[in-house]
Length: 254
Image 1 (cartoon, rainbow, N blue to C red):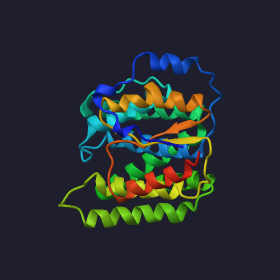
Image 2: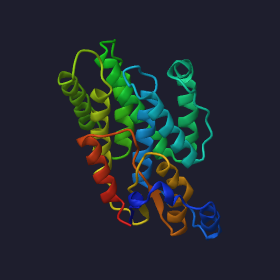
Image 3: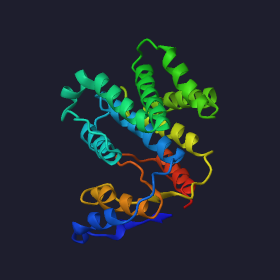
């Protein structure tokens, strides 16, 4: 099932009683979804890791999307408002987030770790720092545990990072040199999943006021209909992102 609310304008904000109406509907228990857990977990790990690095110049965008997802997931974590405030607390906050996610959805917690490891590993290698291959090994162990060709996929990711850096706009480390290969890794993790009849892919604008529609209305409506709603994350673009969207949309067959 796919919902396309993109034709709505700012004047079409859902009335406040939409949430109350949906809440009065009988809701089934949440359906487990490998697609939902892999996609959201991986991107959560990527974004919260990108918030550390100066090369990822979109701190506000990453912070907003992480906050939106934590609200969607029902996890309360206070995120500092600037990178300078965030960096000293980054390790502790990441552990709080991953532990909270893993307790409710172990697969999502696993892929949050993989997304974070991939971004951190990519930035570390591009910066020319000493590489600790334990990160690669741990990421591969998680991917293998979920039935993926771990070594092949992760080494392809690392090779992709090198290629992106070689074709970067100039000297230095650029966020896209890591994020684009990471999205390709996510697409490869999603591609083999079977269609999920109970997952609803929501294609919607990421800008406000539209971004709040997902939690306000579409997610609750999908749950009332016996589905789990999935949307992709804002702040992303490029062919690898389109691939991950395409595979997500295809796997959400309901």
